[in-house]
Image 1 (cartoon, rainbow, N blue to C red):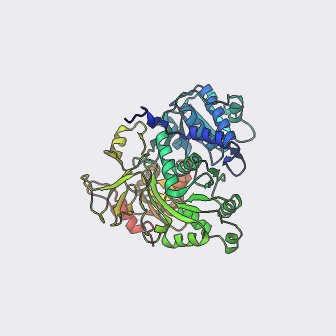
Image 2 (image 1 turned 120 degrees about the horizontal axis):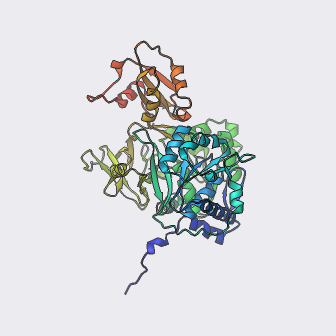
Image 3 (image 1 turned 60 degrees about the horizontal axis):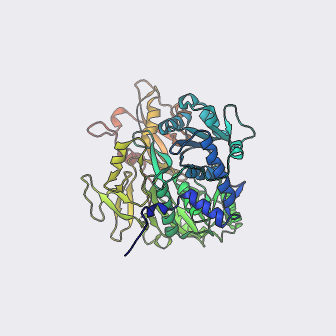
Length: 530
């Protein structure tokens, strides 16, 4: 007779428990670092314990949310681990956002505390009245001194107990609340559980073939799903994570880091690769990239000639490409041996996932070769949108999840994306929804109507372009329109160029909605695979 233990599924270790395991089995091994500092697994675990206990001492409890605003730095590794240990939910905030945008996210999440890096703390000070938190719960790190009205991060850690917090954290408890832009203009909070992140880590280890001897250079912002997912995956299996702690991507410097520290993996957007390929032959040849074994292209499609050039520059490395989202995690993976036999696709379903369903407007599956809305069935799909049950219901068809992408499946089962999330723009790996930019431009007194689209850009993949109808009597002034956006929206979302048209030239549906697709056709479409 077979017997078993009830609740066996709860034995799936979360991130914090895996960190404790590595600290016990390989305490002196390098666990996490940025470009200036490093932590062994034992040191990392100890500081994460202390930070977790210090947050509890400030009055935070399991399930409370803590906002995090920082550039890439080692503290991210401590904060993610500390929240995993305490059951507190991390709310990573994009450092490129303006104060009003940050304020919306922190208020919507109902944060009980905020952790901010020195250079960014003024953005929080500007919205303090709206947050209305106790002064002790504004935690500051970096810089030479702690500003008035802030608690010192290092002092909190030094004063706290080094031991596992008392909270019982279950696999289905939320770990992160990451905000992703929505077509309504306001971002939505994506709830990810400990179980989901652990499952994603295990699938990544199988799909990409990573292990404890790997060292991942994380270039994308640690507030993004891409870096968080790979951070979790490499740490979970005992590898080293190196956080690229520069404010901006410097291709020559990044290449030097890859060679000098012996990275075995990095994930970059096509823009980053194009910048690397643009380096001189001398700059490319001075680095030993022999340990680099795996490269990932993510967040946007790369052209065939770009892929070939990448493989020539990194001859010892395999080139992967993935498609995924904050909500679904990794959905498909294109492996190195498939790059040119299935060019233009994003691969097939990841290990452990159910079949992708491509549905028409009536909810029926479409045949191969026909476009349909992509519904994925991954073992790490998000738990829902924060405080938005209607949006959560819209995202699911039974157990399958959609983020609104349209795709085609070929006869071999490979998936090709044919449209993006509604009219989303991807510029340098950042997702930009036109409605957010249109709301800012539409508030300009001179503007009668506006539509925002993405136009091809050699460096960024796409650039934000505004199509504007002025009020009668107003004179077209592109510079004035661009200046209007300053301080009202994040810099990467601001238009790079403007076209002025007459009201009758704005393409619309019969119900009056602007046809962004027609504008893209008229002014320039998104880059396609070569």
